Length: 291
Image (cartoon, rainbow, N blue to C red; front, side, top):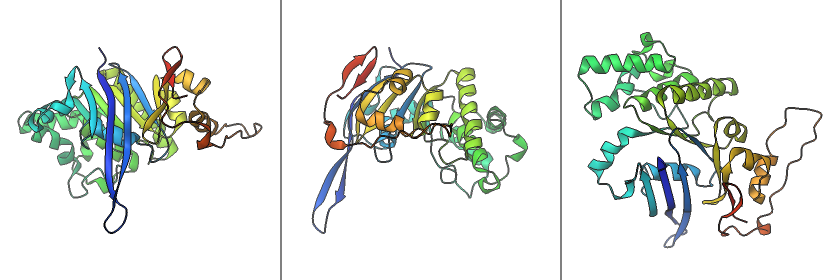
């Protein structure tokens, strides 16, 4: 059984379209995928494709309109608030912007300790020891715990956010564009840390990103989202080596080639060339595309 199973997940938002009119928009429309234990599963697409909403619906940070989400066989959408709170010990998220995800008025010791306090884990001395252990785990000096977030660099803040997410020893982590706000050199450090933690702690990742080169390096399988739906999904090698959907081909063609002697071969997507509502069909072993 897969660790996480998402079936026909849907999320509809209602927005104003005038003084008296409202317009409904499907941010996520019939998304299905599964993630095996210990896997890094990528979710990619341009801004507005629905990938972040999908990640937040899975954790019920945003309530889905419909569908099913099962974690270790448990239907997350059927849980009460109290049951969901207990389940969230095992499922955490690292947000995109470390400048906004950390309360600037709290010292980082209190920020990392907060999940332990909320879930009443250990006494004060045990929590203090756990916070110091977490800081060391993400490569930071425990002597910095009494500083405020603004005293750290962007990469260090994201390490603090990761320490906070790991406080309750989760097995599943949603990394929502977790390195996109960082400099390229810092991105590599944080990605290497994520991979190291996965190996040491047995973590499973849903890796949401728009940087296809990064996804190619860290993920085993990937789903490509287009306008709230999955356009293509399968092993990373198949998706990047022989993309079947026009949208995926356009995305892959936009990956920069680090060779000045190679002419850019970027494709221009023609939305009229395919049916955005087409169902997925198998085009290779474990490789599905809406064509």
